[in-house]
Length: 413
Ligand code: PYC
Image 1 (cartoon, rainbow, N blue to C red):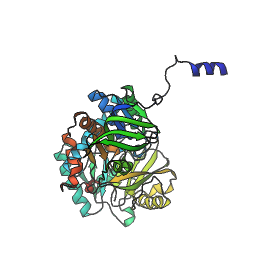
Image 2 (cartoon, protein in one colour):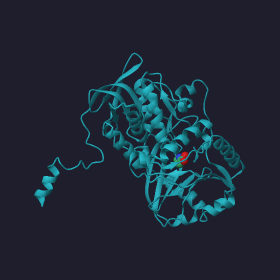
Image 3 (cartoon, rainbow, N blue to C red):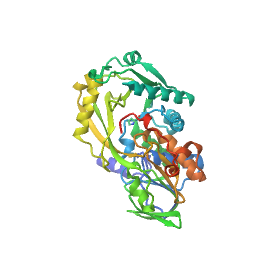
Image 4 (cartoon, rainbow, N blue to C red):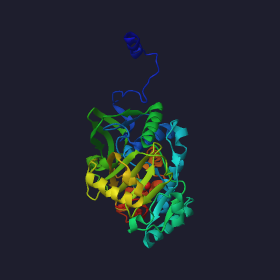
């Protein structure tokens, strides 16, 4: 028996059992280097190879793929934003997500649930009506519904919220969905790798080289490489990368925490969000309640989860869903939100030629993954800014052309 196992282990005839091939040594030169092996970086690599035929690409990931914000969010997909620019962009992302399991040949457990953003006062209702108007104008399914409709959708909710913040109605967005987040990273990674993209995990960037105003190379802890173009898609690590080029985009990093409870029988088949109570919740296919809250108030570049957050979140969750008080928390984590002043991302070209940025996603990065990857790939391949991401260019901060997307937030900031 041991000999048979040994023979199989050493045999080259058996199919490669790993999801990704083993990491090769770094080559001296690549056409494109993507810093960040999260969903955005991997999606960009995939679309560069698949849509533009650019295959001499390395994705550099300091840790393991999908181990940053891609694996640390609450997996919500929606497009009910406030600004027309945001709505169009996130709707394009939602449409790509909907068909992504088939495209990547992996079950992403994409599940359309409907998404309720609760209104607890007149101000909330005003913003919901505004969002519904903009959404419908952009072809996105979204409407304001009354309190009775919310009660009918989720009878387990206490719509008086313990008497403190009674629910008056909600913005209802039927296509709101959840999707298995780690599978999104793995799906893009495998599809990109099958097209020839190299994915280098445990490879940390230490510096960037320029000649004139053009980026030409990267120093890593596994050696130096030259490259035609560099994409930075590292979310909460952005300042550490851009500082090498003297670029300081207006980003502040705040932790964002979330948790899951022990599994219970399915009872919640929608996504419920309350910005006033700082709570969002859904039920996973395993029966766990997935719960999140507001970003931490302090700037902090770390993934530490805190007991204070859990007690604050539990307090608000129990106001809205009293039965949750009997559930145990099973896992609890934090990611790094890179917030911009107008709550819209920073995407595309930068003052350094051939250096492209994908940053400033705040609490919305995961839902943007497919379209961020696709538009960034278009931008790199053509060196032209696609129409869909023109509003997100970095110059908007010096041209006073901010977007004002804060009203679309699911949580307090
Ligand atoms: O915008 O849907 C959202 C969201 C949920 C958690 C963080 N952001």
